[in-house]
Every structure is written in structure tokens, then in C-alpha cells.
Image (tube, rainbow, N blue to C red; front, side, top):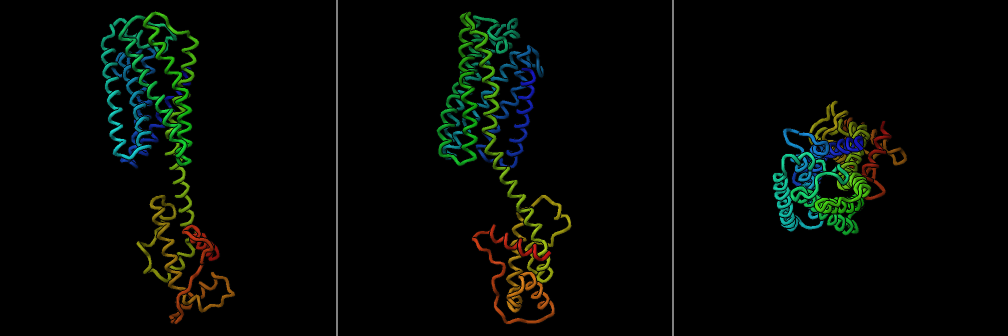
Length: 369
């Protein structure tokens, strides 16, 4: 169990690093901000929860205050998950109003839990903090302890049950990446709902001196851990999948940029004035920045150059390969000869779209090597 908690902490802070990186790149995306709140609540609350479970002080806070921090951060994470679904389902204006409404019960819950923590006697604070790991043990009949845990777990139960319904509902009409993420999230929520229901029942029964059976509390823990992991994976999945798709496009543009180099170099030597910005330096061969900009610029410059040289190519025999005709036309122009031919289309793709156009240019560039 201890190794599993360490793994959970590593996964939590790794996920937090990913979403913070994405948030820096897209700071105004409300859905990404909501995901960040979810992951941050889970990650930040994790070390406080471990300290509270061991009855230890952490960062100058006694175990029961650590338990308050962990529960509050978990509830903030659930609120972030609620906001994620709201902003995914509604327009931004309506979503903001709904998010503010859901903020009220969260704030009230944290305030009442804080009052409960401050009301717990000093001699019971360590034992009260270790209640979640006591598997049915711990102090009984203490109202403040019962209010703290039942209210904290009750809010999580409400949030997880609501999110499960929303996840299943909006997965039906979502695009594939988001649908997969929602289905993974709903699977995690389906595990968290019974786990929290058992915890709430245990909190109430403890007050009356009748703790639930230990095997039932153990089962709740085994529902809880994979449920949390699946929720985080499901929420982060669409964002990561989008970044993977963007990375594939980036790599494809980088490869095309280099593949077009023989054609671009040949045309640029004859028409340097057609360069849209600047002559590429040697660093461009290894530079990983501005790939899309350099790619589109090179494609446009290649097409402009082919249009400029096409009247000279039109004078060459059609039986020759296009690469030989292009070289011949460039030599003719370079000799100072003048042509009266009209521009013609060169390297015409069979299909529509820029991708087909680039593939045709790549074929021509390859034949010029």
C-alpha cells in the first residue's frame, strides 16, 4: 500500500507539471484552467494526506490541519472537474454563472470543516487525523469529527455522482478524442461513487459507536485509488492527444521543409528577390523553432519560383523528365535569353489541397537530388 501511495504521488506531480506547461501556453482556456485546478488539488493535497495518515506534523501544521488541507484540496479538485464539464457543455457566459453557483457550496463546506477542525480537542487531534486509515477504529461519538469527515466525503460523493452523469451524457456527442477521455473519466467516477458512499456511511456510523466492517472499508480504499488515477488520465487525455497530433503535424512539416531544400535552393539562386523573409541560415537545418512558418514560406517560395521559370520550361521538350526540363529552363534564363511563352502549370497534383501540392513538390525536389 505504501508503494502504491508513492506511485500515486509521482503520477500526481507529473500530471501537474504537464498541465502547468499547457496552461502557460494557453492561459485563457477555461477548460484547461479547470483541469489544472483538478490536478493541482490532487497533487498538493497528497503530501498533506500522507502526513495526516501517519499522525505527523507537516510544514508546521498539526495532523488534523493537514487533514483539512487535503480534504479542501480534493474538494477544489472536484470543483475544477465540475467546471471542466460546465465549460465543455455551455457557452462561456452561461458556464461562468454556473461555476459561481457551484462555488457557493464549496466555500460553505470548507468553512464548516474548518470550524469542525478547530473544535476538536487537543488530545484527540492525532487520533482524529488517523481516522481514514484506522479501518473502523478511532474516536467515536465526537460531533466535530463526524461533521468534518461526513461533510468532506459527502461533497466528494455529490461531485463524483454528478460528474458521472454528465460524463456519460456528453460523451455521446463529443468528438473522438474527447469522447475517449470522458469514458475513461466516467469509469473512474463509477469507482469513486461507491467508495465515497462507504466513507460517508462509515463517518455517520462511527458517531453512534457502530463502525462499519473492516473489509468494507478496505474495499472502499481499493475503489478509491484506481478511480482517482482514471479520472486524471481521462481528463488529461484529450489535451495530451491534441498535443500528440500537433507534434505529428510539426514533424511532418519539418520533414517536408528539408525535403523541399533541393528545389528551393535551385529556384532561390535564380530568383532571390522572391524570398518572403530571409535566406535560411545553417542553424535552420537543426532549429526546432518556427517550423510551421518556415514550412509554409518554403512551399510558397517554391511555387512562386516555378511560376517564374515556367515560360522557359515550356520551351523544353515534353518528353524529358520535369527535373531535366527545369534545369534546362534555369540555364536558358541564366544565359540572358528572353522568352515570349506564357507561364504554364508545373508539378500539378492529382488531388486538391495543400498536402497534395506539397507531395508533388517533394517528388520534384527528390528528382533534383
